[in-house]
Image (cartoon, rainbow, N blue to C red; front, top):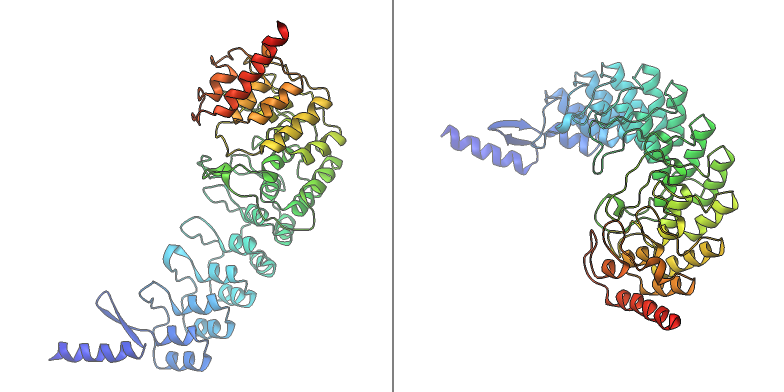
Length: 451
């Protein structure tokens, strides 16, 4: 009989949204409902009637979390004054202070701190309230946390600090507050794992800003002392800009779309400004490696990498500002070869359409680059066009003076351009009959001329 009565009571209460059975326990949810509806009178009534201030619902959510999430200071303060735990965590280790910091409510943050909230508490990913406030650009909360003594140097296992989160999200004012509070503008990440989509070791706030398209913030960081030639991440900002402007396609990291960015400075304006601020326009990458059909990044300049993506507007600007188009990487691969396709593995997915490649090759030959140049891997621009499977690029190179006696040979890996176009290559092994035909036509035409 008691069991039957309990089920009746539970059924009526659930219908009225007042209690719920969780793990066999009856949980009073009146305070949750009142907090969600932001009804202060109902909150005070529920507290007065003895509602548990810290009880979680079936999702692990507490009434105080709801008040913080809604940014309702009056309800949050009412709960805190009546004994709500300012450090009660919800799923993932999120404390009320983290929630309020993310929402951007300085009054709630101050109330929580006043009731004993732990300033440097970390949730399961090692992130603090200061990190969340900085990432969201909630500058007033950043100020409140710093004033209360929050540690600006706390770092996650991925290497992020509050300032690095702010830089990635383009939060200039948050970066300003954090740097004023003692953060080193040239501080870099040292993640435990830098593979895949994890950040690269040595990534600075400047690099995060550039790679996220926040060029105004990037220039502000340079003005504050960030090194425009820093290569600790493996690249300088000018090198990074080449893939920010023109991304590859595909489902890997390189296939991520171009960032939306922020601020009033576009990418080409950024180039002018950072070169004016001391960026070395002919900086050569200090590290990198080659391999089967790979473009060796070691020794590559921003100009060479812009050629690889067939970015003519960027190439023209770099040249105007003093970039040397003849500089090669350590394998002696030049910009014409990179534009043609040396290093292309994923056919149709890497930056540079066929018309873009043709336009860049035309321009580079006008600058004096030799279409018959071979690098240390015995590859030529024609090998590059074969890697891209671009038959019109093959025809253009022929028009520009590429001779079969200079390119119709095996590279270090044992492949001629025709073999590459036939699928003898890493990555895409699908043959391109059109490219094969264009290469064969060039060979046949040369033989006829010789005869």
